[in-house]
Structures are given as structure tokens and as C-alpha cells.
Length: 336
Ligand SMILES: Cc1cc2nc3c(=O)[nH]c(=O)nc-3n(C[C@H](O)[C@H](O)[C@H](O)COP(=O)(O)O)c2cc1C
Image: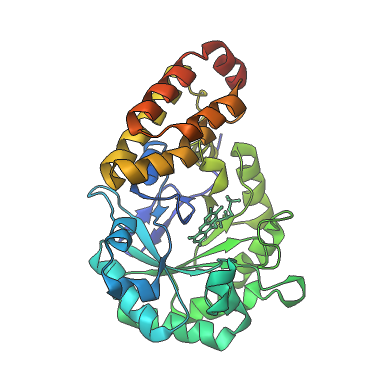
């Protein structure tokens, strides 16, 4: 099979595999990104950091942007609408190892939009420009931008924002094919991603509702995008990255994970969580991540309920081991 996407250059990096792990607040921490790297993702993005949080020197903020020495290229994502704070945040991101600074203008969450940040900024194109100018002027690394297609159905301005971004000097644009009003409902509109692609010559990454190799293939066909970003489908299922990577590169599809392989990833994830966050926070985060790995498996609901009650990391490890390794038959059925 022919390779579907050739990759592109971004600053000094060759993005040979244009497959990007979506930034997800509370999820794409270092442990999760480490797992995703294993499955061949070409670029990772940290969780979003609020620009006003960076000068507070909070340990938690520092931990959010911690990157591994070999985790390159990596983007650190910043959010905010005040050019002054965004400039400072961008410099801070570079000091913390960002190869690219990614600006979030896609977040639909009320708390973020109230401060006219995230996707709310799409309504004010002059403000978009001043934030982009401030950030691009502040750092030497490429600045990338993540947007939605507009505020709502009536005010979609994806092509205009794309052009404005390119003129300002943005090096890569990611478009989540939903408006802010859609939040996460309905379907992502991949044709709207194509409108951004037609409007500019910088790389455009398509995002929204990719769940497997086939959906990635269709998004590429419909939008003409230069790369694919995947978020929710990776939760508990990093294997989907290998599947989409194979589609992008024209490689044969990878074999589904064996029960042992699945268990090894869960165990590794638990270990990274403990090492990175300490046991207390790791236990809380594992309650979110580990049940995701059981999606579609026999007895998953019962496992999830029981797992939520566990109080220590060791109990979680044993319960997960017991569940994932003792469900060979069901796992085989799931994989089939
Ligand atoms: C729990 C969660 C947290 C998210 N946090 C961020 C974020 O911090 N920054 C951002 O740009 N997008 C964020 N997003 C949006 C995703 O990056 C992505 O655009 C969206 O989920 C659509 O892609 P998908 O259909 O592949 O999940 C988040 C999404 C989810 C589900």
C-alpha cells in the first residue's frame, strides 16, 4: 500500500510520521505520553497550562509539562487571552523543554471561555492576532495553533482564522472539526478541516472522531489534511495509534494486542503513574485510566466498580493483573 501522508518539516524537526497525540487536560501527562510514544506517535502535546499559572511556580504546573529527555519533538500547550501572560508562558514553555509552543484556541470549557480564552477567542479575530503576534515574537521555536471551526454554526470562521494564523507566522495548524457550540456532541465536520487546508500552505492537522485506521483514511481523503491528531480513542487503547500510523505509512495493519501485551501496558502505565505523581495521586489517576483498558471486555462493568473502591496502588496492581491476565478467552474474543 502507498504511503498516505509524506510528513513535513516543523522548524528543525522532520515530522516523518504526522500522527499527533491530542492534548487532553488531566490525561496526557508524562506517563500517558510515554505509553503513546511506544505505539509510534510522531508528536506529543502536553496538557494545557493556563498562562497565568506559570509564574506561580506551582509544583503541579511544573509536573504537567515535565518531558522525558528522549521525548522529542514535543509541544507544550498554553492557553490564555492576555498577550502579556501568553508571552511569558511561551518563554516558560521553551525553558521547560518545548520544541514547539502550541496555543489552545479550541477549549470549549466554560471556565476557560469566560476569560475569553480557548475557543471563545475565535469570536475576536483581532485578539487572536495580538496573542499570536505576542507569542511568536517571544520565542525562537515554531508556534503552532489548535482551533475549532468557529464559535457556532452561524459564525464559522475556520478559513479566516487559518489565513490569519499563517500570516502571523504560525507554523502548523490543528483543526478540531467542531464548533464551540457543539462541545463534544454531533459529528466532527471533516470538510471544514478541508476549508482550512485550502486556505493555507502551512501543515494542517485534522482532528475529531478518529477511532481507527479506516476513519483516519477517510479524514485524509475528505479534508486533504497533512496529519492526524487523535484524542479520546487513545484512552485505554494506545494500540489505535499503531493502527493509524500503519495507514499513514502504507504499512500492513498491526496485529491486535495479546492479553499478555495488554496487561504489560497496563502494568507499565501504573508504574509510570506512581513514579511520576507519587502514590496518592497515582491511585486517583489510575481509577480513570485502568478501567478504560477494560472497555468492551467481559465483566468490565464489575471490574470498574470494584477498581474504584481500591485504596492503594498495590491493590490496584493486583486487581488489574488478576482481571487482565485471567480473561484470556474474553480478551481473545474482544480482539477478534
Ligand atoms: C478530557 C479532555 C481534555 C481535553 N483537553 C484539551 C486541552 O487541554 N487542550 C486542547 O487543545 N484540547 C483538549 N481537548 C480536546 C482534544 O484535544 C481533541 O481536540 C478532542 O477530544 C477531539 O478529538 P478526538 O475526537 O480524537 O477526541 C480535550 C478533550 C478531552 C476529551
